[in-house]
Length: 181
Image 1 (cartoon, rainbow, N blue to C red):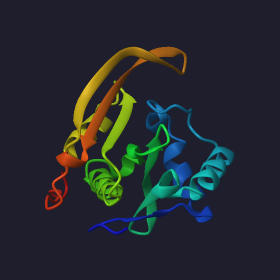
Image 2 (cartoon, rainbow, N blue to C red):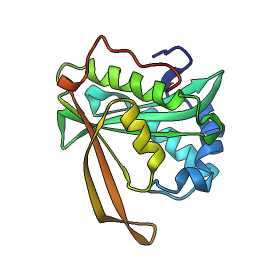
Image 3 (cartoon, helix red, strand yellow):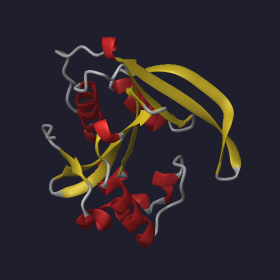
Image 4 (cartoon, one colour):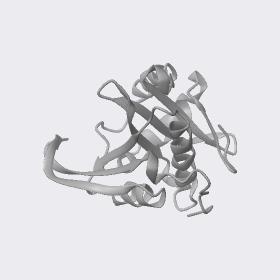
């Protein structure tokens, strides 16, 4: 998939260094379920995600490439074995923060997901402290539906979970994303 400034494509073995560059940073992994990655973690992640190429098979994992370099990733997977329910996830290098690239990538992923006629509902769950991801969900017009207090044990502490969602009926197919938002 291409957007104005990005190429979204499946993972390739050659992406390990770029993926490691952002996933090895403690600030990037602060609200994720894993610690900063080592090289072997990044290699295993790229290998695992490179097999996720079609939502119709349960999951699609894509890197976001900008100016020839992987700067983030977006993922979509079916929930509860239902092709009608999809969850999204995303991670981006802080080096590209504030430029709207993550918003552009998630918007394109939503378009891709809703191209599957069977998809009814899309969600994104995040650590409640992750205000950057919450703002991104809101920029792509997802609605906050829930906020669960201390419902998840992660990295030695109870954390909150924010849940954002969008229904197919919320998505106006003629609506375009204002660039650089």
